[in-house]
Length: 226
Image (cartoon, rainbow, N blue to C red; front, side, top):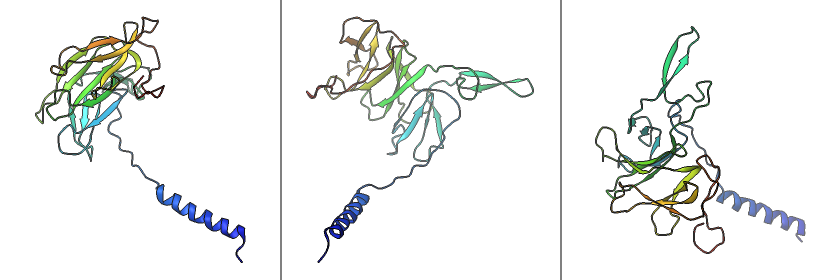
């Protein structure tokens, strides 16, 4: 007669085998695109329309899946002086970050991809330095040169703005604070290149450009985003 202990052990072994089959260990390879500091965020999208996901960070985007070919979609003229061991200086592209000794900030804080003009090509949205403007860059559909920039919001406050569908209409908005109000900015989708309209959702408060912390989610479970 089989003991209850053996039956329990058998059940445990079967359960562990089933658990292991459902939870595989995935491995990732790190691919460093650059050692220069250009932006605080990055995004991905199919920017060359080849069916592969590409990566955009700062003024550049890299072709996936190899991420070796790099393209410049807005001017990369920013630079700083790095002191060399012999006392001379060398100009380094980008903002002074880990390669330097000073704490500096990029004017490119958050990046998102979206097909704004409905032409089937992913564009790039940049939410700039807190309190500054936000812009989207129009994908030139495989043509060379800088992408056309559309400034859509003059003041994007808060240190954690985002781009998501807050209103539930199936189209994303910029969620941020602006001028002391929490709210969202949305376009006329027939003319997304024109300035977007900011819609306050709170009374005016003490919130300013460097206010930290903001999120979007269905807090009370009513099916609508808060």
